[in-house]
Length: 433
Ligand SMILES: C[S@@+](CC[C@H](N)C(=O)[O-])C[C@H]1O[C@@H](n2cnc3c(N)ncnc32)[C@H](O)[C@@H]1O
Image (cartoon, rainbow, N blue to C red):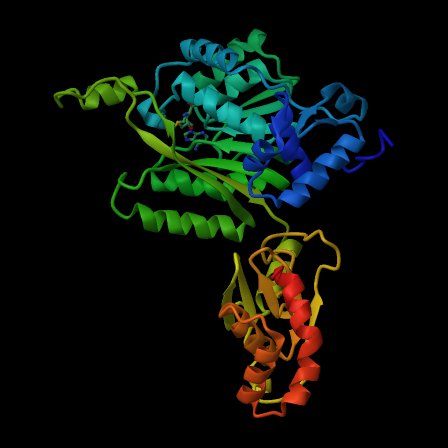
C-alpha cells in the first residue's frame, strides 16, 4: 500500500471526488450531487478505495480528505483559497490593470466573477499543474497571486502584459510566463492541463481562438471559452454551430455549459459610446456563457462509434402493475402460440444490483425488468405474460391461473399445470406477493 498505489496519478472520478472533499467533510448524498452524475455505486467504491489508502476517511456516512496523506503519496492538490481571499486579490489586480482598450475589445471581469471562475477551476481541476490563460489577464493575474502552479499568460496587449509583469512580487505561482503575442502566432513549448480563454466576441476572434487554443491542451485536459449571449447579433446561433464543428473536429467534447455565468464591467469606452441613452449606467449588464471542453483521444471516439452501431433494444415491452411494482416484460412475437417451458434467470446473481439504469446492462439480454431494478433473462415470455396478467387482476390461485392459460393457449390443463408450477412460485417470490 502507499506511494505506488497511484503511479499513474488519480483517475478522473478520484480527482473529482477529491476536488469535492478538499474543503472538509460531506455526506455521501452531497458528494453524489456534485460528482457530475457518476453512478452511486461507482462513487461508493471509489471513496472506499481512497479510504483504504487513507486519502479519505470514512466516518459514519460522511467522508473527508486527509491531504497530509495525499502529500505522502506524492499527490498534491492545488490549494483552495477562501472565497473572500480570492475576492480581495481580484480587487487588487483590477486596480493595476490598465484602462480597457477598445482596439483589443477589452472588458474586465468584476471581482466577484473572477472569484466564481477561479473557484470553479480549482474545484474542477484540483490536481492540474499547468495553466494557460489566453486573453483573460484579470483572471490570470489573480490566479498567479493565489496558487502555486505553472502559469502562462498570453495577451496581445503590451500594456496589459507590462502591468502584470510589474506586479510579479505579488505572485505565489511557482512559474509565471508572460507572453505578449497574438494567439494566432503563439506556439507553446508544452501542452497545458487547463487552457482558459476569453476572446473578443467578433466572429474572427472567436474563430481564431477556437482554431488555436485547443491545440495547447494535453490529452484529457480542459479548455474554457466564453460565448456571447443569444441576442448579441443576428445569426449568432449559426456562428456557434460553425465553432462547435470546429471544436469537435479537434476532438474537443463539450463537458459543461454555464449560461450567463460571466458578467463584465462596463469599460470607459462603452460608457462614452452609450452616454446618450438615458438610464445607461456603469452597472455591469453584459453577460457571457462559459463553456468547458475536454480533449478526447481518437481511440476513445472510435469505441463510441462502434457502440452506436448496435441497435437499442428499448422498445416492445409489456407493462404490468403488480402491488407496488411495475414489471416490464419483453414482447417476443415469434413464440406466441407455442407451449414451451418458460425460464427466468437473474442477471445479477447476488442481492446487489450494479446500477439503476441501462448503463451497466446489456439491454438485449433483459427479458423481465422490475421497478426495483431486478433484471432477468427469460424465455417463453408469452406464458410469463399470461401469469402476470392474472397477478395484475389479483388472481393468485394456481388452479385458476392454470385454467386461464390452458384456455388461452388451447392446451390440455395437465400439460399447462406442469409447466406453470415452478414459474408461478418463482414469480411470486420475485414480486413478493
Ligand atoms: C474580452 S477581453 C477579456 C478580458 C477578461 N474578461 C479579463 O477580465 O481578463 C479580451 C482579451 O483578449 C486580448 N486579446 C484580444 N485579441 C487577442 C489576440 N488575437 N490574441 C491574444 N489576446 C488577444 C485582449 O487584449 C483582452 O485582454
